[in-house]
Image 1 (cartoon, rainbow, N blue to C red):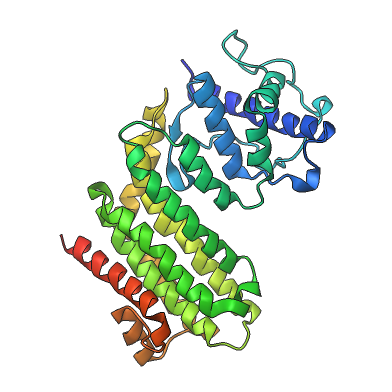
Image 2 (image 1 turned 30 degrees about the vertical axis):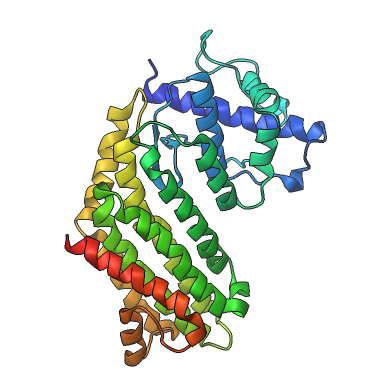
Length: 340
């Protein structure tokens, strides 16, 4: 049986194995260093894949980005890039000496030779959130508890692609009107998937309140000829609220239902505490703070504009009737679920 400390050691072996695999792959000409896009999300997914394939016994929850090990590693400052063998202290051995555990070097060859082309695809796909949709299709757990959430995670990953584009700098503002309507379209399937799941119905209200607030902010940004640095910084913060509050709430609740592994009892209390915090309304304070601060950067709406947003559309462009209908459906669906 793995203790929490053992899991930390095993995760480090896998992580360094991935870094050594990147070094060897680069030496073999499979990809260049500039083509490598390895972040913490993809690291978690590679750890999950080898854990499932080799039955390593690591404890996993779903959290914000689907199956991921408990983040107990203490070396988050280490760059997730190629690392030559001479720089790895435990290359030819495992931190957990046993015939049941691979060495760091053996993990590297697992990724290069057994995962093979799939490893190359995972570490070189430019957009992490694009890759996540494929990951959920191919590797999401198939047990009856976890499969209920796969479509929700795929819908959220597609929404996150748009959110990340808006939060990634000012370039999005050149097409701000399109982004406004794209947001509403991509929020809709997320809300629909949540509404199908009784265990998540209490997370729909935060999502809907966030959607209305964010699209209102984006609408006001659309009216600006150009964004100031302070306005973009505020919008970046608004995007982070999705990850750190609204979607985190959903992820914590899902993880309570889907976590598995040898140290679930160690992981559960922290997740339960986080979920309870959100259930008690901490998300309201976060969204209220965002709403109160928008005036300071000139992105607060006129009263009549707010009334239109609350009703589910802007009523200004007949060509956008389909989009307005989508917004209306989301709002009506949210009100129905919340009232039950």
